[in-house]
Length: 85
Image (cartoon, rainbow, N blue to C red):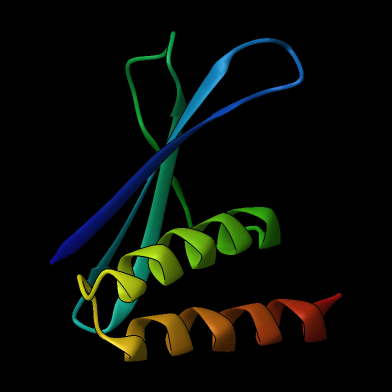
């Protein structure tokens, strides 16, 4: 299982922690505010988080840390999110 983590600042000035993992070919995402203790598992990954994850995976792919197939999987999820709009 590979785990990809990042931080982002919210509009309220809080820090949001996000962790994405791929296990058995399925992507899962969980997030929480830095001030919270419990993680929230997101059943449907929001488009903004998919775009951030794709950028992180692309950078890791360029450094040969992950296979290109992982980037393609996120591209497919992004295309599905675009169709749902």
